[in-house]
Length: 195
Image 1 (tube, helix red, strand yellow):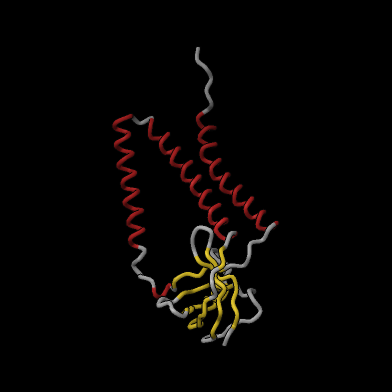
Image 2 (cartoon, one colour; image 1 turned 135 degrees about the vertical axis):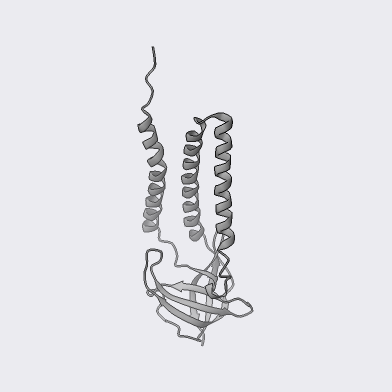
């Protein structure tokens, strides 16, 4: 007499959609928390794209390709050694771990901007600015290229059009109010026009 087991399609559907639903649910909860307790205004302060190596993307892309090749070779080896039944379980485990990592990364990015540590003010000059229209990746605004006193590299910050009342012009001097994220990154939380 055989015992009834859970239907395979139902288990596959749960495995396919539950991790994605957890990620979407976490995103909804974090957005709800932002509505209840808004985060302070902070805009990422990063190195200017024009001074970065245009071929810098090759190293991470190559690492991803090598990682995928290594995973395929490992899957082939495991299939030969342990049979074809192990591969679906291994893929399901990787799928769940991938979405668990996505949930952790989403929460860390949210928490990183909520707990900013203020830093001493920076004197800077706007050496370039460019209006960026809204897109799927950004709300748009004005991209400032900044020369910070005492730093060799140029920095950039994308400031929304509705941020601040005084809009500095090209070559004006600013006093930036920077802050460091909880785990990574630097942000600008405000500025004063000094000249």
